[in-house]
Image (cartoon, rainbow, N blue to C red; front, side, top):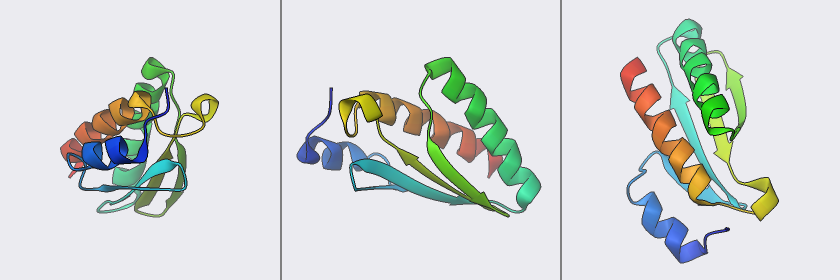
Length: 95
């Protein structure tokens, strides 16, 4: 179920790297180099498969940009925050 804007903003207080706009939550992570970035992306990919929830993302050299939304709900849901939390855990280990 799609979350309302105020619920999303409250939840984002626990996710300082993320912001909400255009019906998605977005984050940008910078790594030491491409190899570290790609390593994190690989680990995130396995987590996405296990949750059966997949981000929209782009990578240029050592920067990973991620957008999360639940397309069939038309916006941000609990699934997006669950995946964002897992991504945060993976990225923290990389840093």
